[in-house]
Length: 68
Image (cartoon, rainbow, N blue to C red; front, side):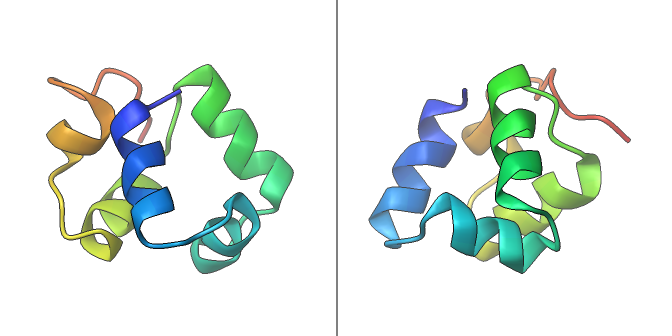
């Protein structure tokens, strides 16, 4: 999991289902990406823009779980 992503998601009142829809994913796909720490780079960029935060903040220094 990504604690800062979860914090920003909650701060904006977004459910996993809502965020998944915004990313064009099923809720199961979104939860699996978060749980396995393998967020696609396009989704990471969209989330960073959505929450006006850097990918480093949302996913940790170096953003190791980002997949292209």
